[in-house]
Image (tube, rainbow, N blue to C red; front, top):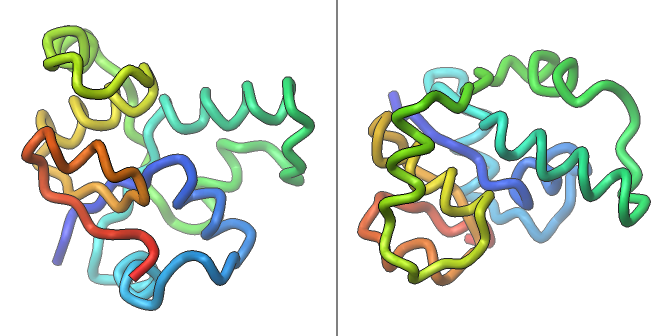
Length: 128
């Protein structure tokens, strides 16, 4: 059993059944033995993109997380402190939160972002 956190783009690719999401990543996400987490930061980021750029996703984002049996991951004060304390390798605040949550909760992060692995967290390449 693995404990896996989805990066925002990975969650969107999963929802859209986008072929850019690699076979290994799909297998990990669809394996019922794995615990798949979606961060509140991801839902927040996607909601902003939906509002500002017209990203088209049908339905309530919270319901979409639940419909796939994914586990919502709240942002707590420790996560916020950890994100702020990270070295300034990555500038995106949403990604910094995901990195902090992965560190704090012992999660692997499925991502396509090539900067995130520089933080030394366990990552899975999303396109493989």
